[in-house]
Amino acid sequence: MKYYFWVFLFFLTVYIAPLGGRPMLSPDEFRYAEIPREMIASGNWSAPTLLGVRYFEKPVLGYWLTAASFKCFGENAFALRLPAALGAGIAAFFIALLVFQAIGDHKVAALAAALFLTAGLVYGVGTTAVLDLPLTAFVTGVLCTAYLALAEPCFNRRKIFLLISCGLLGGGAFMVKGFIGLALPGVAVLGFVLWERRWKELWQMPWIPLVAAVAVVLPWAWAVHRAQPDFWRYFLVEEHWQRFTGGTDSDHVEPWWFFLPVLAGGIFPAAFPALPALISFRKTEWSRLFERSIFRFALLAFVLPFILLSCSGGKLPTYILPCFPGLAILAGGMVAVYFNTGGHNRGFRWVFDFLGGVFFVGGCGMAMLALSRFAELVPLRPLWCGLAGGVLAAGGVTLLLCRNKWRLRLYIFFGVFALTTFCGGFIIDPVTIGSKMPEFFLVQTRTRLVSQPDSTLIVTTRRLMQAAAWGFPDCEILVVDELGELDYGCAAADAEGKESPHITLEAFTRLVNRPDRGKTIVLMDSNSPSWLEEDEFDFGKAKRYEVKNEFTAIRLSPGEQVKVRQ
Image (cartoon, rainbow, N blue to C red; front, top):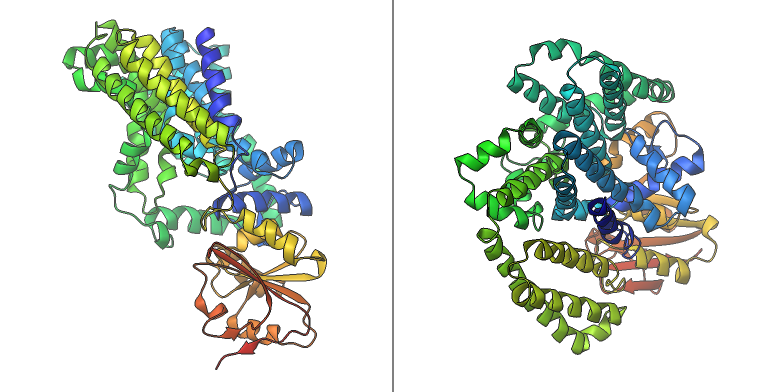
């Protein structure tokens, strides 16, 4: 059990402890914060809304998880990111459970889970409030229970329990991101059944999971249909078919090979322990690895979803995260086979000599920065100095004191990753960040310019609309011109004669010089359209607040005139 304890401690240090240490990212984190906040405020738990209009890009379970976290820990960055971090931890748990149940080796099970948590893409997304890792957790659960059900020699109570669990987890995957949550594990399980030539399972297995998944999805599916009859048409046509074919997802249309460099970069630094095996494996080692069915299953769980995602027209780097559990299981098995075949002193030593050098040089560089004026500009300077000393010491120990102790070198590798990510989660200055982190700007704008929020109108652009809604929940928000992801919701609200946050440039021109206009604040970032200030309007001596040429807030008091340029 000690191996699982160390993995759990690693997870707490890397994923949970630093969650609230950095500002929120725009637009994704503000979007996935604002939708649950609006659910809590309105009591409407079936149909998601953003800025008060319908937002049908995803089902509701991801928003429910965030709303529950808000209820427990308050509306803050830690609570917002907690579901994503727990998604990474739960996926690692299913990886360890699957490997141990399949081969009975605690070391390999813990190593596979640790390698999954150490992948750069998993860490980056697992500490950010997006839905890909909650989806990955459910998909990994489906893969785990499906494989264990297939491993049962007869149709007994355990198999029925596993199939029901598989369906419940599949329903959860659908409730996070739709049919892709069923398709990704589905192609992997189908491919494995065909590879193993277990034709009877094709007809026996699907029915129990299918009924269980429908039981999970049906209550909400019926509720959202009653509340918003157009949901399923939009969700199936626009968010599934059009996104897969690239018909309406023009911002995310990428070539078929797009995920290859994402995968190559995203697997590091977790790939380092498996590199010696990958380099030195011959046919004998590969045969030994794949003689166990779990590693054949892991290969298909990685390759087939990767191919399916590569066929989609719309692509984002985070989409391939459900492929990483299979890859982590393969990597853990490769390391085990490598050492079981006498590979203690070959490529492993070379790889970790290289890593030790990287640690030592990096530690020296950080130590020099810690002794320079740079450290004075960084909050929590002692943390920066501790990080520099820790990485430097790890490099020295790896190179000089434990060249033949491969297990200690492996512990140092995970320790350096934990130390770096833990400290890095706090060493961020909110004043010096760029346009992706407007949280400090919003807080300061509210403090300096907003005295009575309920009577203040906020006017902004699509780049800041999610952040503005989160930062000013008690103000009316208007978005000028382009809406992007709110096009559908605002069009539907206009068609039904309801209020929407959209305001045209002409309407804004009329608004700013109305004699009965109340206090208005215009929020801009460095990439906002120039018409707000340079081409169309002269805001004169209106009170301003600016942050590092990235953000600008302009307060227009009642009766304060704005010149409209011709």
